[in-house]
Length: 272
Ligand SMILES: C[S@@+](CC[C@H](N)C(=O)[O-])C[C@H]1O[C@@H](n2cnc3c(N)ncnc32)[C@H](O)[C@@H]1O
Image (cartoon, rainbow, N blue to C red; front, side, top):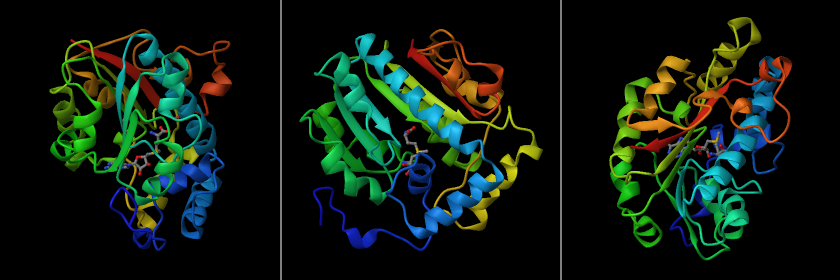
């Protein structure tokens, strides 16, 4: 057993796992044959998955930097993914080494890599838990150790809510986390959308791969009007909820050509 109370025998290599497929899209090696086959199928029918995932990771970097530069000193990162440098705490620590980060994911593969890549700094923690169980996450001892609910918190829900189905009520889940955040806290969301990809781009067929291969979670893309309400109770910071390359780009304004390959919305809200 590892420190996270989990045995490597629990790694399931019989079904594709979204965390491991995402790792494949990003060019990582922490995936298995079953993941590679499914992920390659997604790439074949919807090649824009690759620029989309890369743009998402860059969005994550820019938004974490923004949190730290805005004075946030504690972050809860749910659905953190297989560690891919730089991770949340590394980006935050470039701004301020005293930022504390609680990492959460429900995939055991993340736990196998957490010790080496997420926990080195002393002011970080990781535990396995499910976004769909807010009480378990919020009551976890690692949260108790790292997070002070009287101080502003950064909540990251980056590329994870689209793994929550409509019947699981993602808005109610986001609200459960929102309700414990003190005013001035900041929430980062990115979310897959089909708004920029008509069906002939393969986006719908790509989602079917997750279903057909019985991946451990399926993908629900959502239009702008369904992503925006996740920010109820928050003021969006400029430039609002946008296609992610448009969220405070580091370099030149993304071109229409670049944007046409990215199917994700993102934004940051400040709790009012
Ligand atoms: C696409 S990756 C995103 C990783 C990282 N947040 C990023 O944006 O680079 C989605 C992650 O969310 C995790 N995940 C999916 N559903 C989850 C759930 N219900 N609870 C916790 N984690 C979940 C997956 O295991 C995976 O690691």
